[in-house]
Amino acid sequence: MDRTTDGSDGSDGTAGDGDERTAADGRRPPGAEDDAAARPSPRERRIAAWRAAPRVLARLGFLAPLGERLALLQAAGGVYDLDEDADIYGNGVVEALERRVAGLLGTEAAAFFPTGTMAQQVALRCWAGRTGGTAVALHPLSHPEVHEQNAFSQVSGLRPVRITNEPRLPTAEEVRDFGEPFGALMLELPLRDAGFVLPTWQELTEVVDAAREREAVVHIDGARLWECTEHFDRPLAEIADLADSVYVSFYKSLDAFGGAALAGPTGLIEEARAWRHRYGGNVFQQFPTALSALVGLERELPRLPEYVRHARVVAGALREGLEAGGLPWFRVHPEVPHTHDFQVWLPYDAEVVAEAAIGAAEETGAMLFAGYWDPKGPGLSFTEVHVRAAGLEWSAGDVRAAAEEFARRLLRG
Image 1 (cartoon, rainbow, N blue to C red):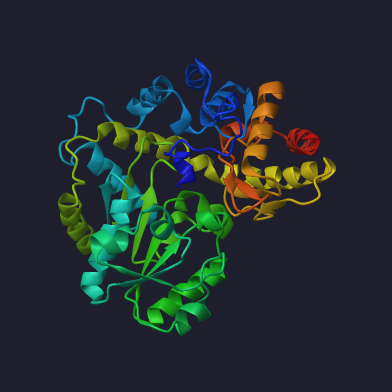
Image 2 (image 1 turned 90 degrees about the horizontal axis):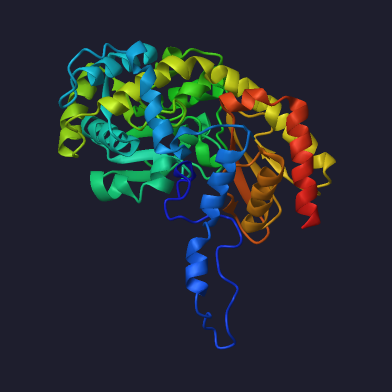
């Protein structure tokens, strides 16, 4: 399940989704099914609590009502001339967005894609044609391995090889000593499913050098690359310059309606456009998504370093509050977040902590944990914490108090 999309199957780590009223023979009494259908699902309760809570750490656009999402385009006139013709098959505003991305990343060119899944398949397929090797070295927790239903192998004829099982990016030594050849090394920055973790700048450059020694190309899965500048203390263009190609997303941090871009040398991008057409990605008109991406680059991109810095304040205060509330064990990971997202692990079943999070929000108006709780074994679950503009309104003391109250609520049961 891709927790970014909040569980497309409608599942949730929240208790109370079933109806307890059953007869001795297992049949429900008349009207029980109607009562169950009328009650909100766990996911609906959680989102309703998040929307209603005056205080949250992030107002994620993809969970907002449709009217609120459309209001984002009210700012479009400030980023593009709306008297221009609408795009047709990738011209106009889509080309303007591509030029903006190439400029930010310091690459020769960029191509818009409707999804990152398509963009990365195309990029690595193109590189395989150039290197002659279909093997792609990547982490087993990377997005193509976890969230794309084996698209690399099933659709694009690529062969993923797992370079390490450690919950971090591979080291230079692991790349250098890997026991079989590969044509491309894919690095997800940050590695989301390991806790949005990043290497140090030195570690990253050493990994890239090790790949070059093996004559492999380097592709960055930069779905969340926009927020990495604070950790690396480097501009986007310097980070992107390490790689032969880079993919970026427009909705994960920039709050756009969707979309992605592949950036790299002109020859690669021209070939990628041809494959984009073959994959069905050359959509007739995409101006709503392209405009929302330009708005995100204008409004959100400059604020991401501030969100990252405040996420570190929030993470520290969470630790202090959960400890003060008496929890015997918990984990904030990473202890000092590398981006504005991080994980919180608790020794409780997912439905228990989810119910506590919703109850706290409904009673106090403050929602620390608005995300899906993912079960990871008996009595163990984790959630992702996102800090955006709304989180800047929380002081460390506010977070500590809310975390302490949440911990006491869990202990009360």
